[in-house]
Length: 353
Ligand code: ZN
Image (tube, rainbow, N blue to C red):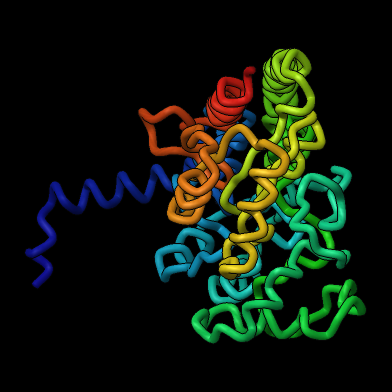
């Protein structure tokens, strides 16, 4: 039986073993890129920018994917099990992640990219359905009577209990986002903060390349700042009363706060809850009353309601915005900065008098 392992094969095996041994002894030379898993595509791109050749990045929720409603796969668990660093958004965006971490046995470091940003509260401006409550989720109330959204039940129930639910401590349900709007990357200043946090996380996990990570984050931060300044100028040049748009879900609150645009969302900050007919009717009224110039579809949500609103109000359909995910490669939003520039351009073009 030994003959099955031929002499050349045996030499190859021994050589391979030798290589492994030498790799273990001289990590600085043989070191492989740091294995990083990012929870969703936008973060994956930021990690790639900051990590450069020193990291190998894979993402869990890919291009055009909806991280609110994601169901991890066994392949995700394997990815995470093999990772040395996990980068997440935080602000309760990835509600499905704790279970995946547990299932995978992941024991590496974790970076929360949004750490240090000023969270936008749901109660903040930019999203007015004419409700009187202090949560943007309130339109979910109407839904309890529809019984057509199996996935939403837990979510809806929480909001039946009135305003005392702000502690966000809701046991098992997974669509509630506590108090903060998770879409912080929709302000470029926050994106720069993400990059710095990622750099520090990479530096801690891989001190040999700490300088490289910090330098890349600096250079990337300068590009982010430049784009930020351009976009501010663009929107400042548009009359304030025209800076209003309708989007599918409430993902652009940070964008609105940063660049002075009011976003009226058909659904809430999560894609989980579908708006009721009454919600849609109310938005149609608002669009007409306030002469909202344009409505936008998103890459991660169905365009149906937004198109209906456009039909019934005469507002123009401004195109596709990338909200919670990058586009596929070769399409306009394949990186964080391309996505941001694209969104700003589509919005500005539609709002121009
Ligand atoms: Zn979202």
